Length: 246
Image (cartoon, rainbow, N blue to C red; front, side, top):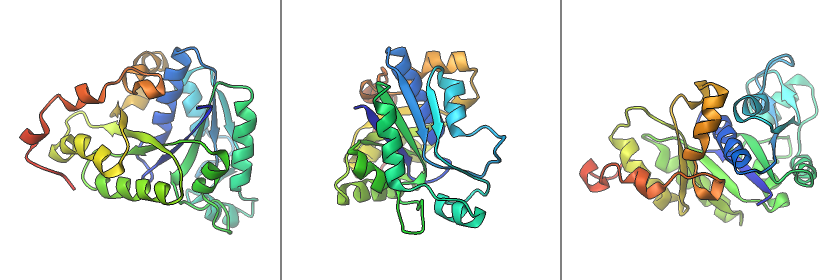
């Protein structure tokens, strides 16, 4: 798995912190890692972007950003409004492939969700995934509403013939409610893919050394970690939670 594409079920689900955790776990396993941010929106040129944040938390990664647009919009819209060239799927794929010749693992972080448009022709992260032939890790939320958005994303990946590696809960609440606890069992079912990790709420606020030490415990073996889905889900019995959350 030289390239792994990381997308989310929407914005603010924890993609960047999850990318950092996967990178930190891979580094701890002795792998060389590059992180590619396809398009950064909503930041000035002098501000730190998502790739920079991954490097700050994870450590010695090669951090690359293909384009930056000042307004916090979908990349295609942000590029058009700024009068700047868009990032096209083939450019994302070519950059990832080049990085893969020099690193054991390349993590490609998308913007928003799978079908957010990068250009006026309708190019999406899914198109870049197809060109790469890479698996996709979907970052999702824990609580109410996540089953619908997660299943929609999983169905779209399958409809396009793309490989869904698994799911990670990007922010596991400190005090999980009934819906969150039930969703630990239900998310893999609706997605047809395994749950491969859960990051604690506030993980990104940890000191980098503490983040790196803890990261392998947040992701499963498929992601170079030691997190165990059965042990995590077994903290309470799903039947005792009173049914299925939607």
